[in-house]
Image (cartoon, rainbow, N blue to C red):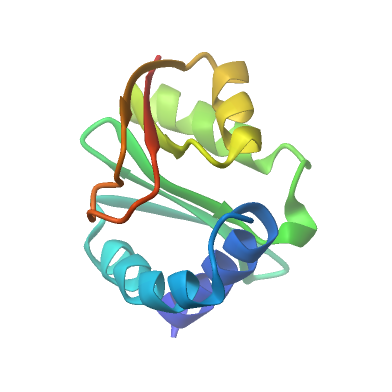
Length: 134
């Protein structure tokens, strides 16, 4: 039940922020997102009135996922989650889609810098990834 709610948040967030993805891309990526949610080392869920509105997943000092429902964009929740990850998990890394400049700017404001570019994401999809380190 929780996973399906988080996948709905993932989809809404992706549709609002990943404008480079086609409908077919989103449908194809959904099972990968579900698998990642089920197997992530640390998963924090943000709630409002006891319903999920966002989540962050961390694995081995790397932010692997951070998605908020679009109604909660730009309200400081992402910043709070990243700061908590710094404080509690000593996070140092994050990957960002190159075609998502808002995410890149957000992580730069949080102290990350690009150190490597890859033509494909970790699943082999043709979406350039920027590897960032704090």
